[in-house]
Length: 238
Image (cartoon, rainbow, N blue to C red; front, side):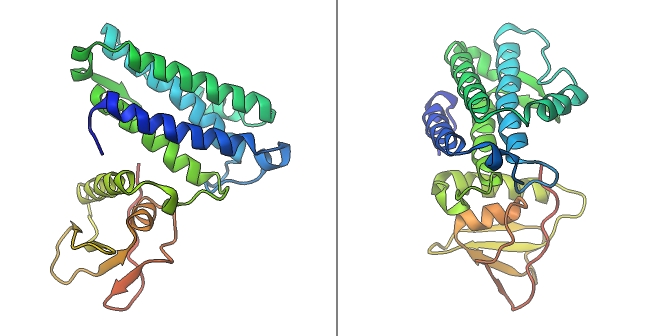
């Protein structure tokens, strides 16, 4: 998968179209149903995805103008916006998703080349502006999974799943107590090692299922472990 943010927008557009098709299928009862995220309905998830687009527009604007714009006004405001928007009608959710996706695309389109080298203040700390488009793609694809609406890790492209897997593995490896495991991709000699390889269990499976399990979005049922035993428990992801 390309690291060029402008080229990566094609992936964002395609992922957005898939998410919009799913959102368009929801009625009031569907939106009120539980998502895969504890305490959140599908309406909460869709509202979060829309507000995330607003937040990324703020960061792109900060990179372009040099203004110190935060992603969100505050964590409290972020939570309140998600809560207040969760119970809206299907049409309101869909309009919000479309509008904010368009605003994000417009903000990317007006970025000067040198602005991508800026560092912005994301929710959890400084972030390179060049990674904002990847961050938006990750947000859409992972939260589409969270809707529990017949969209699965197997529906992710292999390139997206590979990048997510490597990113999550790096995140876990830098933690205070990294788990030791070797992740082996089906049909490939490619491995991702976290922690100490010596004696570490080997977890094998399709790349999408490995990535979803590693970020806490799947129970790992399609995966196998060598030697036989329970799957390791990945640390909390971002």
